[in-house]
Amino acid sequence: MRTISQVAELTGISTRTLQYYDEIGLLKPSELTGSGYRLYDDEALQKLQQILFFKELGFKLKEIKEILQKPDFDRIKAFKRQKELLLLKRNRTDRLIQLLSHLEKGEQCMSFKEFDLSDYITALEEFKNNSTDDVVKHWGSIENFDMFIQKIRDNESEVAKLAIKQFGSIENYTESMKHNLEHFSELMDNWHSKVSEEMRTDDKFFKLASHKGEDVASDNVQNLVKEIIAYAHGNTLFETIGDDDKYCNMIIELYSNDYLKTVNDTEYGTGGCDYVAEAFQYYLHKSKQK
Image: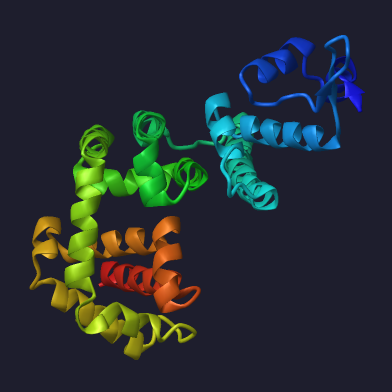
């Protein structure tokens, strides 16, 4: 057992912070002495370590408490997810350092002002905080949604290029996405019903996923992609999207979503969704070369 002062010395966290964690029910001491002094065992220190990892990733104390109190909370699984998020964060930092290295040498680098997605990312953070139930319902967990946001941060330039191409500007894209977030639950319910009803006819996607392991550039695979796109022209979902490129991007995004992959891969087999997304990505890439 360690006293609160010993824990503070070991971790660098102030005793007042530890007292506050106790007050809000985030980290209770393992036991109290007869005089009311807090004592912490190794299990409490492991929990504190978990809390610090979540804080490093930007989680609020309220969010951390909710995660740790879930009946199905898996400490090892959480460590793995935190590692993934920290690696994403590190990769972004490495790229920023690389850019600064070029700049300090006086090299000419393009401006990134036009690729600023901060307003969109802020909207996503606000959506996460205000619509927790919707986030968990459609992404599986808060952690999955945080990973989704981190991926946007790490690929900000590419996302911004696509946004400008499809919406004309970052401002238009952000306003459109804010509207979608405001009506997210309704849109997702409609989305899933249309996908379920129209895109699974004749099990075309299952057929495509069954070729997993085959080169996505093969004629067999690309003909299946073309067949799906041709079929899509005749359904109402395609009418709301507008063209082949947007439809392909929609499919790629849909089949790359971590939560939806978990659901669909039970039908397609592990890696099936990734394979579908890769096949459409190749088709989209080839179509732009023509």
